[in-house]
Image (cartoon, rainbow, N blue to C red; front, side):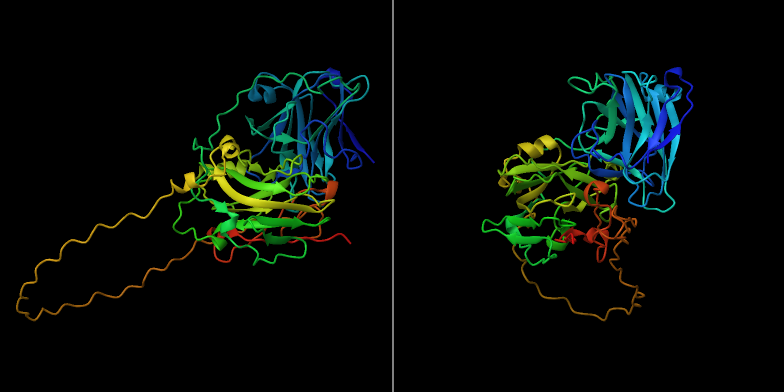
Length: 484
């Protein structure tokens, strides 16, 4: 049953507006005011930002404006929602009187639309608005947040702590009293968009790259749910069976690659991860995959540290898929603090696939921009030519002429220096990733993934590195459950 809370407003036009939070309204959990596959759960509890919201432009009288928010299966946790009429900029807007809220949604049901309903006679008129989520609380520790996509949507601008975030949308419903013809969104306001602080101008990938033909990964047996095989041409064949519960492929670099002599991969300069791959069958598109970032400050597959892997399901030709973590606030913060790439977890499909998925991977590389990744022709000889080489040693000089040794006299005795303990190379302690619970509620502190519309995201911890976070690297860890 829908929970309707009447809110008394200071604005006359919405005198009978209502708030709502309900899980029964799941006929379209993907939302209707956001990109497709808006399936990344953006955690807000214990995140390094306080508020997130969307500027929207509506084209007619609206009956409902809501976000869709997960509570990681346990229906525990609170979020506050506020709606304003947009005025000039963020600071001016939030200083004004809200149209609705602030309203606290306590212990809302998992995947509930949370926001506001407008009753007949007091509908929300066409205009530009800003709706914000804040004050995330969750005593259980499993988390609360909002579904998101790492893509722009022309009908909303996302602001995080008041700052515009490029390539990020939140899952929303904006329902109209009368369905509009054409675009459901109106003209967006001019807002200040900060210059990106990540990325460099290098047109080539970083000198450390990963060509599958150089490495034999078939020694990693994985589980019965994912099969890995080296093709004759050296590419890696990945098979994910229908209804597989998880499809994880953990690229922890130093496990498989001798990188001690390689230059570190700067997250700040080379934030974009590109995967050259080929889908074998596109008759049953299965949506996006997901990549969790491993860096010197991010020690595991942790909620809030992932980005979507968006395949082109219209072709079986080779394609370069670019993973863009730059919209992730935690990644950005750590990257600007000189983090280095240590690996990533490649989840081939975010949800349980309704059909078998097969793909071949040729190479993985890091780029300074998405444009450079898409333009790269795969000729790594250009990259190898730029790789540092060992400095040549100088030619030996002619040995000096031997002369008669002087008479040896007894050297004065001196006390041997006191022995000191030899220094040891003690690795830094790995930071444990926070314990999280998967949305389906049946696994704790492991790589977890929610299934279907009920949850849809993997929030968990992979790969507790044996020695240090810096020891994380490319392994093939795939743990899935089959449906019974």
